[in-house]
Amino acid sequence: MKRQINLYNRVVDYSIHRSKRAKRLRLAVYCDGSFVVTLPKNFPENKIEKYLISKSQWIISKLDFFNELNKKQRIPTEKSGLSVYKKDALDLVNERLNYFNAKFYNYKFNQIKIKNQKTLWGSCSKKGNLNFNYKIIFLTPKTRDYIIVHELCHIKELNHSRKFWNLVSIAIPNYPKIVNEVRNKGLDLI
Image 1 (cartoon, rainbow, N blue to C red):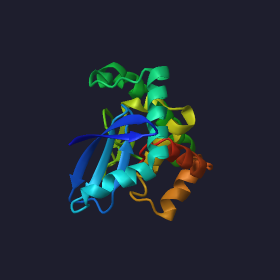
Image 2 (cartoon, rainbow, N blue to C red; image 1 turned 135 degrees about the horizontal axis):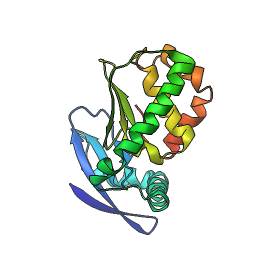
Image 3 (tube, rainbow, N blue to C red; image 1 turned 90 degrees about the horizontal axis):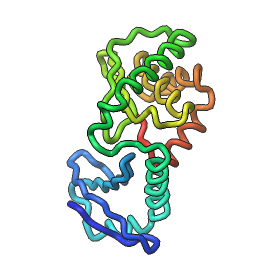
Image 4 (cartoon, rainbow, N blue to C red; image 1 turned 90 degrees about the vertical axis):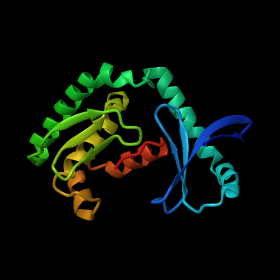
């Protein structure tokens, strides 16, 4: 369901998505500049606007960030972006993954896939397959290295336990700072 709200004298378009699995209201601004509000099944709609107004500074900053990023780096918003950038993204991920794995971890993993994911930068399956968003090539080197190491460490620890974060810190000792920067920019990392 498409809606609009006025934040800081600016009309902002957003979509509402109701989820049976959502336990709380969630705001997400994506790389293509779309803004989605996910609601728990029984969340009252009359409280949405008040919540969005209370988060207006965050919302505007994320929309502006992705707008600027898209202008500077011409991140494609159309589906053809995957076909255009898939090989470059795969080459980059392979090179950095092999570097970190050889230097720090020596883990065995299966396939590496490049996808056009709307909400994730990377993921690791129980079968040891590593998946990365093709838009990773548009991120800063330290951010994309963090994402690659994060997913590589899931080969050993398929969770976000203390053991997992200790593994991440072997290659990326300043990972908490990078995680904060990434979250402040509105990027989702799983």
